[in-house]
Each structure stands twice: as structure tokens, then as C-alpha cells.
Image 1: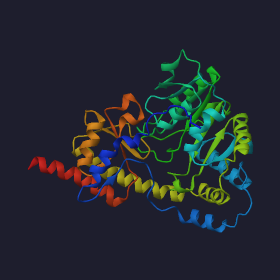
Image 2 (image 1 turned 120 degrees about the vertical axis):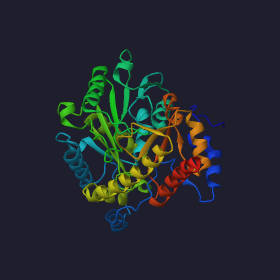
Image 3 (image 1 turned 180 degrees about the vertical axis):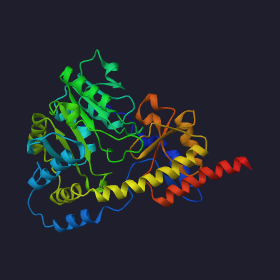
Image 4 (image 1 turned 135 degrees about the horizontal axis):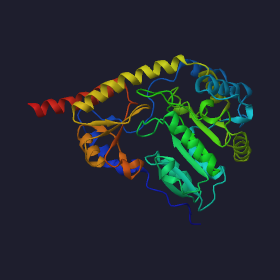
Length: 372
């Protein structure tokens, strides 16, 4: 039988295979700053919780344990200003990317219906919409799609890849737009713990949503916050009818977070100290790398928050990526994220201190060599 699947864009990282090969041939080895994969240790309290719950012979609850649901509610209310929440408004998921990719289908988006995604966007928003057969429109503000009638609207703040942060007013405008259109607003807030020059806000914030999460879904992850990418641990908070609908479908499909991961999530969501420590690590790396890039003639745009620098040399981003590969530095070309990002590259802070320092030294040495 022939395999039949929706036609999807090429997997982006396959298109920079030559750059990766060049970078790996550098005498000092490659500095891979292309993918946002955490490299620092998973906090010990999370590891210990996972180990302590390893005797798990029964199936885990798709809805999560009562203790995990309580931890999600407390985090949403205490950290992000959510209104009073019921258990039926929260749900653990198998990492945020899984939820992003499957949400259009699970929420009932039909072929030909419209999904709005950010103008410069993480590719999985588009992929999930295409899997559902939807029409995809990119927008930077509600004004860009005023005449459309979408059924699903994605926002992403802080942005992956740009690090841009939506203000209170911009976030409120998207909430008002989606509600006026009768669309579900899904807000990807996975990088919210790492604000640098702007403080991220959440659609859960009662100041913005009138004290109600009707028509809203906030998507969060512990991958970056808690160095938990290998565990696949995320959750959603939002409209009770939407969350309950997702729960019902996910029960049928076996989309459940393992019992051991649920316990690690519960413990880590209750601890902000390890987040503050990780934030300090990324802040230090950000300073080292941004200073080196600027000295090498780059401009850094947006990058108000998150784990990436959105940088340009005023040329095609593919050319910039090739040049950096010659220095042994691997980055993601901006066109991975949409046509308007084509003159930028995304540079990740998720590398060890040693690799960040090596990348910075290569940039500085190149400038020094030109001066000589």
C-alpha cells in the first residue's frame, strides 16, 4: 500500500547539512548554536522525583494526578496571574511540540478553514495546520488579518525565533480579536521564564482576559524552564470546554504523560529557585555571545527574551550561516521561520559555557585578524 500523507515543507535542518559538515571540520570542533536543546543538568530535585516514582506498573492518568493538576494551577495563578482555575482547565501534555503539532486536528480544524500563525514562526504551527488541511496565514498583528475568519489563532511570546515579546496591549489585542472572530487563541508561552529587556506576560493574566479564559489556551513547557526536554513535559491551561475536549480525545488516543514524568513535573513546578539559577546561566552566555556578534559587525534585533539571538549582517541569512560555518559555528537561517526572516539567523544560547566562549573567541579573532 502506498503511504499517503499531507505534503509538508522539507525538514529545515536537512537543508543545512553542508554547513554542518563544514563546521564540524573546524580544528576546534563545531559550536552548535542551531537548535535550542538544553545542555545543563536536569535539576536534582526533578531527577530524584523521577527515580522515587519509578515503580509505576499501572497506566498513568491522561488528565494527570490530582497533585500535578494542583501544581499546574498554583504555577499559573502565582506566576502568571491566572484567575481562579478549576482542575478541568489544566492538562499535562507530552511536551509542547506534540500539542502544537496536533492541536489543529484535535480542536476540530477542518480542511480549508483558516489558521493564523505569527509572521515569523516556529515551523510546527504551520505543519500542524497543514496536517489538518487548513489554510495558513501569517500575521504580525490583528490588523493584518482583520478581514479573515480564522478558527485557530497562534501567538508566540516570547517568540521563537526572534525573542520578541508581546506587550500588554498587543496581547490584549490578540485576545479581543480571537474572541470577536469566535476563534480559539492558542498562546505558545514556552520561553516566558527568560525575559531580558522586556518582561513576558501571559494570556492567562486576569488583567488581560477579564478574569476569564474563555476562548484561550496557554501552552507551557518545562523543557527550557527546567532543562527537562528529554522528559517530554508540558501542559496547557485554558478554556474549560476546550481542555475537556482535548482530554476526551487524548484518552482515546493514549496520549498520556508517564507517571514518573508527572511526578518530576509536580516537584519542579513548585520550585522557582532552579529557574533563577538557569536564567543566570543564560544571561551570562547571552552577554558573551551578543558582545562578540556586535564586534563582528552583526546587528541584534528583537531578542528581548528567550534563548536565542536574532541577528543579521544585512545579507541573506543563508550566506551568513555559510560564513559562520567557516568559523565552525552552526546557526539556523532565518528563512526556516518564514520569508520575512530571510536576512537573519537564529543563534541559540543553549550550548555549554565552553562552546559559547569558543564561538565568541572565533568571532573576535576574525575581527582581530582583519585589523591586522
